[in-house]
Image (cartoon, rainbow, N blue to C red; front, side):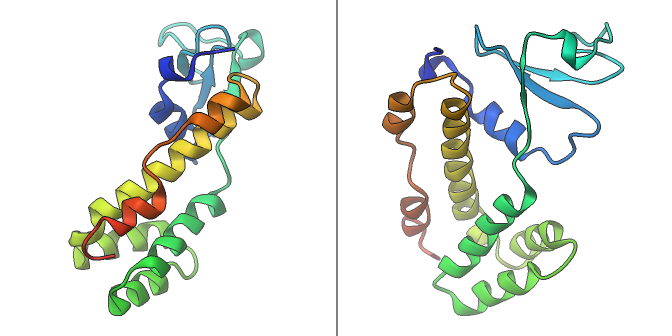
Length: 161
């Protein structure tokens, strides 16, 4: 088992959110917890191509995009400013929702960016720790003890939410 405190939870969260897995893959060394970035033409060391199945590493498959989309829906639903919440909810309709949400947030509601980042990051970290536990890399007890700033507190502590 790996020590959760020695792992880069942020990097694992990034890997779980990376939807461009056709171009590259994220992997984790089950003995050290080190995260590696792999491409078909550069391998993991940036110089030597290697096939994924030749590595003694665990593949970090990204979570489905609907998981991350739901975070945006929950954020929009949790905003106390009805107009901002409705605009953000409308931006999430149809194809291109991630880009429209980001644009709406940055262009019309920059005061909400820090609250969005806090909520998104807190949820991503919880998912990363649960993934580690599900993969048997950390104990379930370590995952239960993981106490990041909760998403509700991240939003509640922001004056616009």
